Length: 76
Image (cartoon, rainbow, N blue to C red; front, side, top):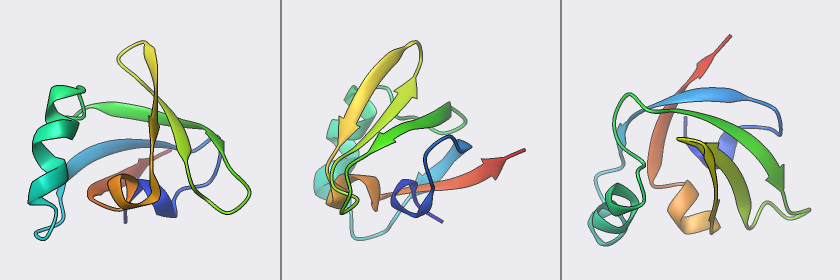
């Protein structure tokens, strides 16, 4: 499951990255999207792009490609 698969209000934990996402991985790591980090999907545009998540106390907006690069597991 990826961040892009979650609905608004869902909580999840980052478990890794898709294999083909090398270009996004370093940018996402620099923004704090690291393994084990918990997040909440706050808002999503009608077509699913972009998606806003709450992570480490701040809001982060990801494009559809970036959101689909992050593997997550749902919490609760």
